[in-house]
Length: 143
Image (cartoon, rainbow, N blue to C red; front, side, top):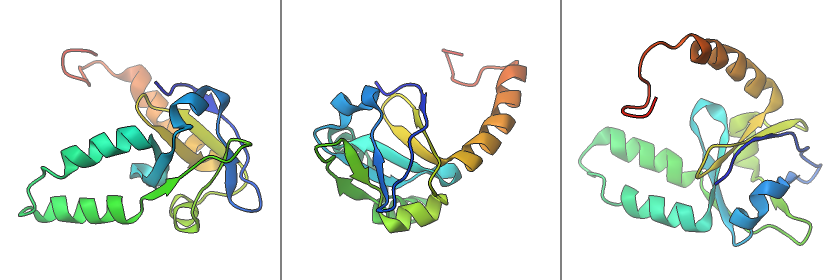
C-alpha cells in the first residue's frame, strides 16, 4: 500500500527518486499516466495490468468510455527504476502536470500521484476545507 506525502526534487533529466516507502511496491516496474486534477498517476506494473484487464471490459459503444480510455492509455508509459531508485517522468507527462523542480508525491493506496508542489498546495487547501466540513457519507458504507 502506498501512503504518505513526500517532497522529492525533479532533476535536470526529468528523473525523480522514488520515496523509500514506495520502492518495494514499484521496484518490479511501474506505469505512469495522466491523472485527474493534472497530476501524474503511478501504478505498479502488476496493479496497472489488473486495472487494464478491468478497463478492457468497458463498453466500447460509449463515447465517454472511448474518450477516457484514449486519454488515460495514450499517456501511459512503462518505466523501470534505475539502481539509484530514480525513474524518468516522460516529457509529455511533465508538461501535462506542470512539473518543475519541486514535487509532491502522495500515496493513494494502490497508486501514487506526482504533483507540482504549487498545484498540490492549492488543491490541498481547497480539498482540506471540504474534508473538515464534510457531514455526509462520501464513500458508501465506510465514511
